Structure formats: C-alpha cells, structure tokens
Length: 151
Image (cartoon, rainbow, N blue to C red; front, side):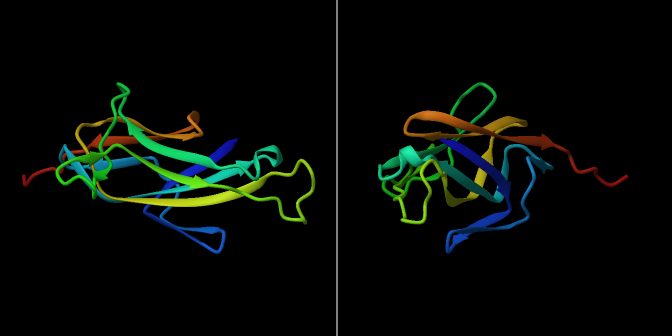
C-alpha cells in the first residue's frame, strides 16, 4: 500500500474527503522548549490495491524523535496518568461493482492531536505503518526561536 500524508492546523474527514485548515507545513517555531503546540492535524490518504480489498487492515501512527525514541501523543483515557505513544485505525475496503480490476481505492483519514508536547528542538517523524509495515515517514521539526526581550 502507498500513503500520502500532510500536516495541517486541523483536519476532518467528511463524506470520503479530507478537509484541511492550514495545511502544508513541517516546522513549529517555539519561544521556549519544551513546547506545547495547540493542535497538529494529520491528513492521510491510503491507496488500497485491488488485491488488498475485502480484507481487514490496521493503520498505526507514532511520533519518533531523531534518536528513534517514541514521543507521547496524548493522555491515555483508559489509564489515568499514562500516555499514548501511538494511534491506530482499522479499515476494510470492499470492491464495488464499478471498480475495474486492478484499480486502487483511496481511504481518507484524519487525526488531530491536541496539546502535543515536544521536549526539545529536534527533528521528529510521524511514522505511518499499515499491517505492521512502515509505509511513510512524515517529517516535523521543532525550532527554538527565543523571543527577544526589551532593549
């Protein structure tokens, strides 16, 4: 499978289409570190080959720092005090009668991460995997840019 993905300020999937606000960036500038970003949206388009239809698949999204260490994405609602380091979504695409043999289908997904905390200025990657196989690495950089004080 192939994945196209992008970062945005916020994303939503409605009626099989992704709606994005503030799309097309890969850097966050912060006056202090650690930095808390209000929202990071991920727009994800999964191309499902004809031969992979009518099967259950699993998408996994995680964030790694430049050392490959997992970055917490959110509080775990099931386990108070613990953090989630990955998100997932299951999908299964059928074969409608209008689909020509060999034709791909697109599965649009959107994920929003509120209050993402990045501990240091670094290069990060959102790593997207399907069925346990890494398919896409989406870069994100946190740049520490101190705000000048009064002169």
